[in-house]
Amino acid sequence: MKVIVVGGGPAGIMSAIMASKNGNEVVLLEKNAKIGRKLYITGKGRCNVTNACDCREFIQNVVSNPKFMMSSIRAFDTDATQEFFEELGVKLKIERGNRVFPLSDKSSDIIDGLLKALKQNHVDVKFETELSDVIVENGFVTKVITNKGKLDCDHLVLATGGLSYHKTGSDGKGLNIAKKLGHTIIKPVSGLNEIIVKGVLDYKGSLIPIKEVLLPEGLSLKNVALSIVNKDNGKELSREFGEMLFTDNGLSGPIALTTSSRINRADFNTILAKIDLKPALDNQTLDKRILSDFSAQANRTFINALSGLLPKSLIPYVISVTRIPKEKVVNSITKEERTRLLNALKELTFVMSGLADIDRAIITAGGVSTKEINPKTMKSTLIPNLSFAGEMIDVDAYTGGFNIQIALSTGYSAGTNI
Image (cartoon, rainbow, N blue to C red):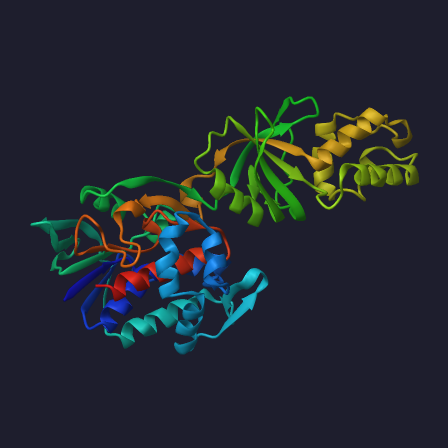
């Protein structure tokens, strides 16, 4: 059979390799001059290619439609991914959180391994070739139309990605074609993206706009907790513990990115973000700590007495929230003011406006509805000789190598079941 695979990311490449291994004549269409453009920049250029966990833990890290992934992750799991690259000569290492990287810390090693596999399996890669339309006759795909002409097609695999990082080629055209072919598209939204902040609430609940109190851009906090709560009843909707980062206009870093994938379809007028800067201490223990610090610095000003409790760049922010004069001498601070400080340390509360633009998201949530894709084969339930793979399917996961593994596993299932 003549198989056309569209998209030179990990999903499309794996689809093409496996389809060729099964004896098909495979053409891989890539709109860029190189394959794996998005892979080059993942993991800050290091490429967190998978996560060394078992299938059960993997499924627990899938945000959207985890059950859909069960068959493909069992068919090609994280161990299989590591073996695949090791056999291609790409040495790997496992870091904190079971994250798997190339030993060299270079994403180019992963790309080179994939190129090698494409050549070994005689896949015809056509670079700078962009899909523009698909011809369907009698319910089957028969031809694809590109910027370089028409190609006959016995089976089509669409693996064109989502909407994040447009410059890498993820422009949504594949989703538009899937919609034209009759598929339901779940609205694409950001996954793993920066949380944009309007401002912070002071101790009275009044909003201090972000332009009045600049965020401590670049400040990284470890061992903190980030919670999302219902604005009306205070019910906690999400809580993550770990590392986060302040940007010029919001919150990023591991726990903020994970949180963003949980709230990417939320009404931001109904929720608040709270940071617990001292999650290891309960209120009573923290109050004793504050009293101890103040007793040891009784004659110092409030701003100078906080260095043992907070990073320097965060002190002005907390002072603004408490509304305690920064030059007030510590021995004159009241119990009520001390409570304000304690509350600021345990519940630094932000009003959010949403997530950063989807083009800045690490991955796209949403895409082709999983209800219209066979989870074992990745075939369309509407068109028998059409399959999907990777980010354009409505499946996404947390950080840690899970999303690239989704691409590889769905690509494997798509390619092997043609």
